[in-house]
Image 1: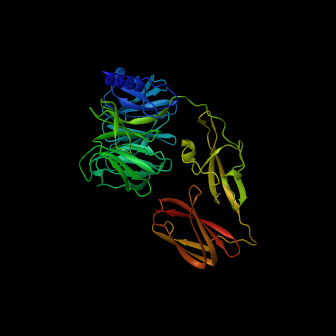
Image 2: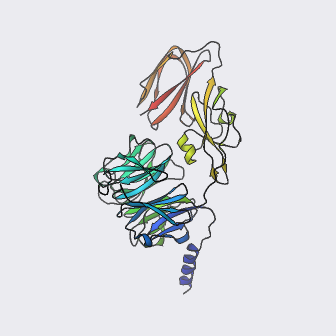
Length: 447
């Protein structure tokens, strides 16, 4: 009897957790959208949205779009829209067929679409603006299932014989595969780990190279970092305390996984779908920081030297990172010539629009080192790149797109090479310094 009382008290605590912050995790447990604590997964509201009045089919995924919540219904071929209080607003019910995951990509919403009925374009990522107006689509090879904005790239998961995690840029261009076909079968939801260095994938099927469960892949090369055999998973979302929310069909429901011990705690047994992070406190954006759009500094200057008002801003290497408030630059990041940086200010948890500042670095030497005096090839490079110079090079320093040093070498030669093995695909900057102290920076693309 005592053990029973302890269990009932613990269950009540899960469903009576106070709202400590406006950020919550939402999950679809038909016919309801349930709200959970992002700290520990405890239940905040077991019936935040009741989908029964809409005669839901199979609501699959949800995401926040500005001050709205969009829910994709896979079998009803539609997107239902709600305000942040959970009140129904409208439905997008044309141009979609067999939809699953959806995500905000800059000022667009991408929806994974598989069929060609209802005016839909077939296997594709269907695009909308933030007001719900159709913008067209990007064709896909195979049936896509989820779309994840990582800040610098977009990941798309697939099922069937085309199962993989595909990489795209914000313009929809395919960059290659992070996880190739043949490794697992039927990837449903994806989520970034807390450090953003790995991505979790909920794998649904036991067919193929590996069994169903939770997979963790490196974002550097797609290699397998860890695996937990949890059955046919649908959704995944890390918690702030280091544990991981998982969802699946009936009897599994939603569980909290301790990745260290491998033990799970079940929140409920009813069939459940994808998770999403929501901020239920609508933001009033503070003013955009102000400052000169073009600024010049001497070599060695850092982001703290950029002239901006207010001074307590957050700097980013890309506009996409600034808009999503992810991957901020570390304090002391050295400025790179001909690079644009983006600043936002955050007030009461609400972020401003970004200020763009393009940097020019003065070369502190007598005379000018003419452009073209250094030849870098191949550029783009895959495994290595070589350089030749009219004057001997004394030092090479390579920066990534975040302004962080990834390689440095002292030398005294007119030619040499830089190995690119193990470097993530992306944009780099190689700064050459000659014997007189003159510097020249060349952009390098790593494929």
